Amino acid sequence: MTEKRIVAGSNTGLRLDVFLSENLGELSRSGIKKLISEGLVTVNGDTVQASYIPKQGDEIHIILNEENPLPEPEDIPLDIVFEDDDLMVINKQKGITTHPAPGNMSGSLVNALLYLGKPLSDSNGDPLRPGIVHRIDKDTTGLILVAKTNEAHEALQKQIQDKTARRIYYALCYDRFRDKEGTVDAPIGRHPKDRKKMAVISGGRPAQTEYRVLRQYKEYTLVELSLKTGRTHQIRVHMAYIGHPVVGDEVYGRKKNRFSTEGQMLHAKIIEFDHPSTGEHMVIECPLPDYFERILDRISGSELE
Image 1 (cartoon, rainbow, N blue to C red):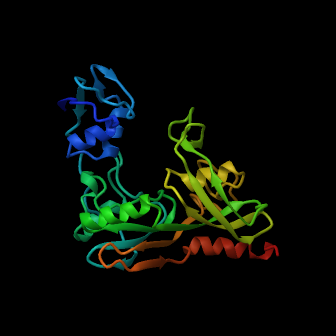
Image 2: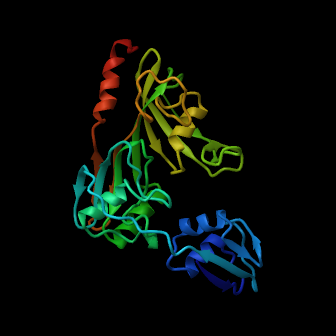
Image 3: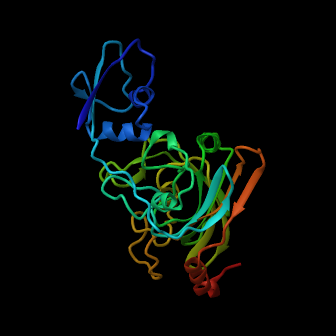
């Protein structure tokens, strides 16, 4: 364990997590937020929130754990849908996390990428997320962007933040939708009683999900969903919030699951972005996974007009 000490200069108006990310080059903003949430960052001896604004004369102490291991390469098969010198687009399979985390350092997409031995961006200095531009949940399948260079990473991430990149998902949800299309606009934050879950809460971060009904069944609906924001578990939380949880969702869904899917029926089917080097508008699509198609076949007799 090592301790760093930083004395804030003139008040810049920056939040604590932003201030530290600019002063600790070896840590990403997400890594700094984690240290703050774990009480490993104090200001004048007191723990504070990430949103705290440092003032002139504040003494900030940061305790770092240098014993955290780095992810190791693992021979995990990858479905590379597109690749060039700047980026890859991977069709992620079910059951694989996007990146490792302390206490769970193996079996992730990052471990598989490291095994390939190809160049990857440094992901803003986060050693656990080389190349990772955005993430999708462990049991969500489909397309994810991987940057090979820091320049590509920055350009792609900016497109996601500016909402010029589009991510379109297919989900099988419970029950029939009253409206054929619409937008769920409801803020998302940590569940007030279960910190491992997210929820629609007052004071949460803005979150918008557009939906369009593709096919109605007697008890289910196949829906196309487009993310306008990228909150943790956003689609799953929003669909549960409007009374149509994703089939198989073991966290936000219904307890009974007649299909034994081992996770939510949610697939990142289409991704659109401008190529970071050429400027070409890219539209990349991948088919639904076999298990998803088999379940649609099972309920095909109950389709409605």
